[in-house]
Image (cartoon, rainbow, N blue to C red; front, top):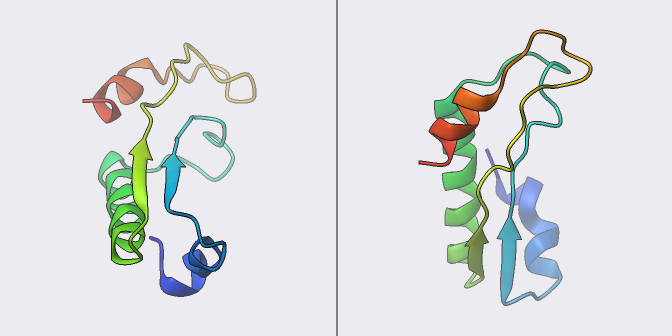
Length: 84
C-alpha cells in the first residue's frame, strides 16, 4: 500500500506523470504475494498519484517462465492473471 509517507517523494519531485511497472523479480525473496494484494497496491499508488494530480501510465507485468533463485516456480499463470 502506498501511504503519503511512502509516496511523498513522488509529489516532491513535481512530476506531472509517472509510470508504474511490475515484475516478478522479487518472487521467492519474501514469499508469495496474493494477487489481490498486488492489485490493492497498484490501486493505492494510482489513487495517491491522481490525488496529487499526477497522470499514471500502467505497464503490464513482463513475461517470465521461471525465477532462477526459486527453482520450480512457474509464474506464467499468475502473470497472465495480473495482466487481465
